Amino acid sequence: MIAFWNYFIYFAVAAVLLWATGAYAAWKDKKKVAYSATILGLAVFFSYILIMWIALDRPPMRTMGETRLWYSFFLPLAGIIVYSRWDYKWLLSFSTVLSLVFICFNLLKPEIHSKTLMPALQSPWFAPHVIIYMFAYALLGGAFVMAVYLLFFKKSKIVTHKELDITDNLVYIGWAFLSLGMLTGALWAKEAWGHYWAWDPKETWAAATWLAYLTYIHYRLRKNCNLEVAMWILIINFALLQMCWWGINYLPSAQGVSVHTDRKSVV
Image (cartoon, rainbow, N blue to C red):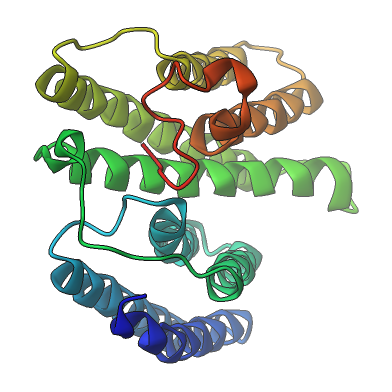
């Protein structure tokens, strides 16, 4: 294992402590502290990703563990965006906790990081494709958390316009980034394999996920849509997203067929 990985825990602890400080400050209505601590935590965590990028001499997004780093970074980013736009405090706290879970997973299950990168991953489209998708996953993860909260944990049965606005906008922006991710993926596939789209199992699940979130968007545009049904659609959609991200690696039907099914690979 490359030596720089041994320093990850120091960057991670510093970042999580800063994110926790920001979340606590948000609950105390100390907005300047909340913004400053959260953004500083993001800077600390991203600095490690940059160090890793330089040390590996390649984008750190070849393996599932490396993409979890990006997801751990984007979750608090999504939380602070929601807090700054809608002053919604608990989502900032929850994004910190969820990010900590992914960080702990990486600490408990470290991977062997090497500088090798298969030719197909050396495309200039590879890095933007993965980064865009990870940001989309973080936003849609936030929408999933909102759906679970509104369905199962909110004491009042009345859903406020603010809560719906947050949920819908997370989906709108997340779906836009999913679309951009699919576009960059198609351009990358054309350069790497000679075709834009081949209905590879990974591509098929990506298309299904994209259509599922588009279904939610259209359903919400109905005049008298059932909010409970809408939230269940989001929960099902998030399950599809997990299949697209890592579940495809464990499907027997995809083994030996998909170019994306190396269990250590994200692509």
